[in-house]
Image 1 (tube, helix red, strand yellow):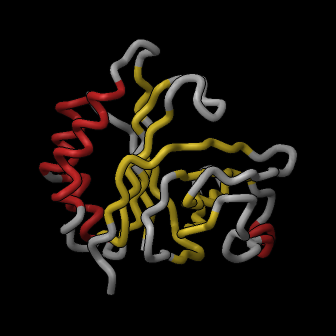
Image 2: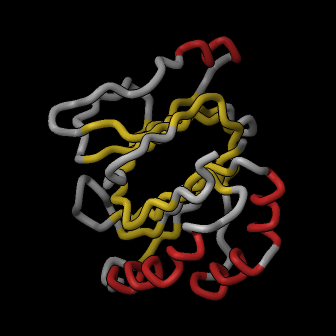
Length: 184
């Protein structure tokens, strides 16, 4: 398994309904995408949950690396380029993960930590715990071996109240659609 993500910065005056319409038009395809465990169609909106700007920022958990390759080399990525221009895609190695069922998540949180040595990987603490009114749905811990960073991407029903360690970076996203085609 591997993860792929990208964040497309959008102008402050960008009509975010355009992104919502794009997601609505493409969601059905992703709900059936072979080799994909899930795709969270995420956005940030300036001034909401500390976001400094607008962005479109999908996150993928690929069960099949060949399917991820086909995404990057085929019509799906070409369509992304047609809509937004060339987009750098970050890839990561999955270290641990769990995908929930039931009510789809509404919020995603990415917490990234720079690692000093490989032994830091032992600091993974398992699935996230509920915080306040927020319930954890799914999570993925992934390693970027190029920058030696660990990112926990957690998906929630409701907005969690999370504290992070000094030096960590956190970004809150809102999920417009959660595609889970590959339940096996």
